[in-house]
Length: 348
Image 1 (tube, rainbow, N blue to C red):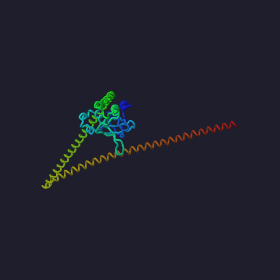
Image 2 (image 1 turned 135 degrees about the horizontal axis):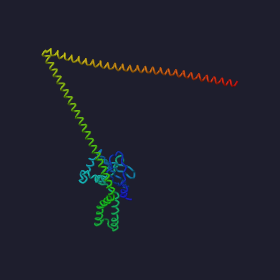
Image 3 (image 1 turned 120 degrees about the vertical axis):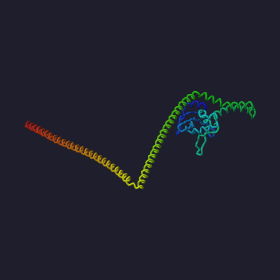
Image 4 (image 1 turned 60 degrees about the vertical axis):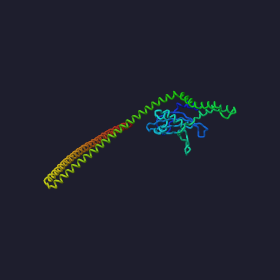
């Protein structure tokens, strides 16, 4: 049971989403990392979650043995900075290769509180399974060389071992890729569909934001125009008032008492007309209130009359019922008395 068998069995498994991690699962890959002491191997499923809403990409490591989860978030800008010197991965459209590049370099360190944290190493972390295979190929040659009594490898053996080391990673990677090609194709198809859906949702959000922004700008423009109109009206009224005051001042200075008197009479006449209109309106309102009050009193009077008649009818009915009941009781009493007398006569 090797690491690659574990990856093959768990390639279709989905790691549990970590808490406080949003977005869609866009990439997943297995990884084996040696512990800090180098004595045991820990197996992880690395999931990549892309959240366009917050412009964040989160790498989440799910440990198979302990069910622990570790996260390493990057903003889109921070992730682009990681590949700013890599001409092949500088393009954001090459997302899967970017995620694989980062996962190869994920490692674990301990902080001051002895808590394990997920970090990005400058170089790819060694694969324990590949190291074991390399050691398995190198050890026989070393034992053979040691049995020959030589402490150093000859030139041909060294060249052969170096060639195997150079081609080992490529062959192993090609084997894993071919083995998981069908699952990867299916996963990528679903991923592209989800991405298109997310892009459509993001586009709709942007359109909605633009519409809201247009509405806000329109409201601001209308409010600004309203304030400008009010300021213009105030300025015109102010100028008109100033002109009137200037005209009055001129007339007063010229001792034009007749014009001033005419203006005062006109002002008084306008005030008198205004008071007259206000008085008529007040009288009309009082008349309406009086009419409503009279109507209300008439309705209450009718209600009292009807209620009195109803109580009177109820009293009469009660008296009739009482008389009828007394008549029935009297007749019943007489019948009982006659029956008693008849029985008494029969007994005698």
